[in-house]
Image 1: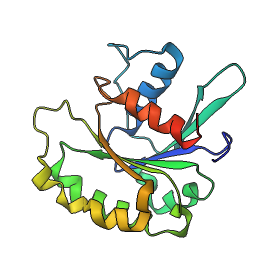
Image 2: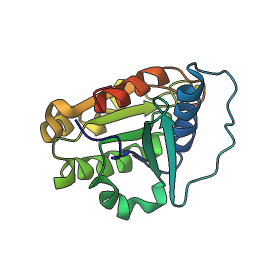
Image 3: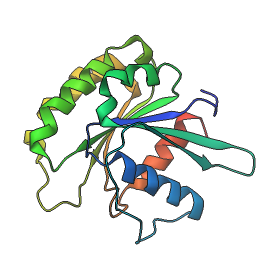
Amino acid sequence: MPELTSPIVILGSQGSGKTLLSRRLTSLQRTGEVLPDIDADVVPSIGVDISNLPIDKTRNIQIKEVGGAMMPLWPTYLKGAAGLIYVVDIADASQLAASATAFHHLCTLPAMKDKPTLLLWNKTDAPRVLPDTETVAFDAARAGAALGDNLTTMRASALDGSNTQAVMTWMRGVYGL
């Protein structure tokens, strides 16, 4: 199991919901519940936002949310990471192919060997969510071939908080907590 000093890295294309997910996870960990009201007023991340989620009085899970504009630098953030959450906006068909290409590239990097990876379909609360037939660009079998049993896929909404408890459980599992 990785040490708690190794962060969970959150990557995804611009506008996929990484910042709101980070806020939602921070709020969930601090309060123990999914609060109905959360500050959803976000701007695109230009750099790296670091959050520490308290586990107990002396330990934290660190998450690093790396902006979509920093895509060329993403591999450098994976080297010391405990795990990866790759966020995909399931309501934005125009970004799907580019997001899939970036994800598959990441899956083949040496830094991803044996790294727990969560492919998170975000914005499931949107009025028009892409059906499974349109998400085949992600080709889970191809990603699974590169990552093996280290790939987990789930759907969530950072906006309304649905399934974010499962994301937190996955994160804790990365560290064996």
